Amino acid sequence: MGMISEFKEFIAKGNVVDLAVGVVIGAAFGKIVTALVDGIVMPALSVMTGGVSFKDWKHVITPAVTDASGKETAAEVAIRYGEFIQVCIDFLLIAFVIFLFIKAYNRMRTPAADAAPPEDVLLLREIRDSLKK
Image (cartoon, rainbow, N blue to C red; front, side, top):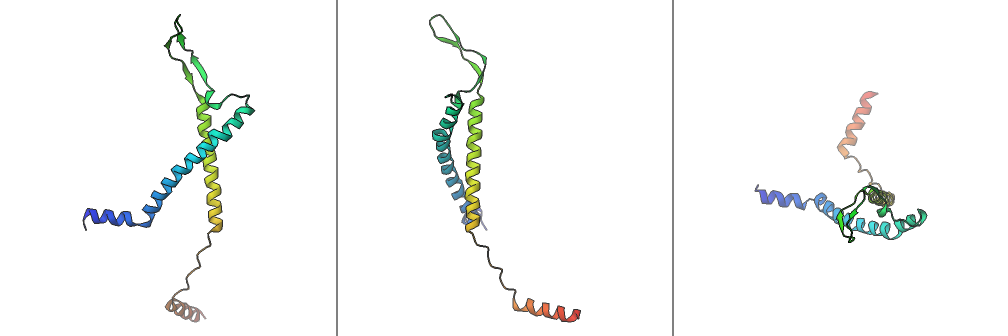
């Protein structure tokens, strides 16, 4: 079997296609949740923290240096922990929404009915049980 035909067989498997669809939908879903966090959740948290955006939270190690004309000669050195907090909140919300989605999906999914054992297996079980007696 040639490499191209093996690759076609690999791609044709349902799991690979399902995974590709899941990645694309997950990326789009991530953008939706990021928009929710940036547009609704973070402004609400900003109001609770005194109107300061999380992205603005930082610890300045070395302030920016400006010359007499007001031109910046050395950039500010700061630890921007606010962006990290926002990304963590993003992640937690995405994980929570995916958890809710999976939970609802599992609730809707019906368990597969067990297939009846073949007739020969039933016959062998009867023979086994009768020999035990």
